[in-house]
Amino acid sequence: MKKRVLFLCTHNSARSQIAQGLMNALLSENYEAFSAGTFATSINPFAIEVMKEIGVDISNQYSKNF
Image (cartoon, rainbow, N blue to C red; front, side, top):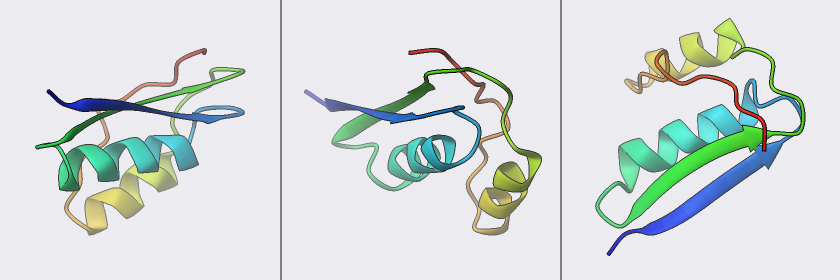
């Protein structure tokens, strides 16, 4: 059974989205990651671009309220 992890931040636009993407890309055999924020906005396009540079696609993720 996979452990579930929730990454929280204020706007759920960059750091928590990156953490979710990295954990799901690198540790998906044992973990299922999610992210949320206190004020949902939109994902920072720079976060998507940086993750794409290392081969992780977070373009389908979206900003969510906690």
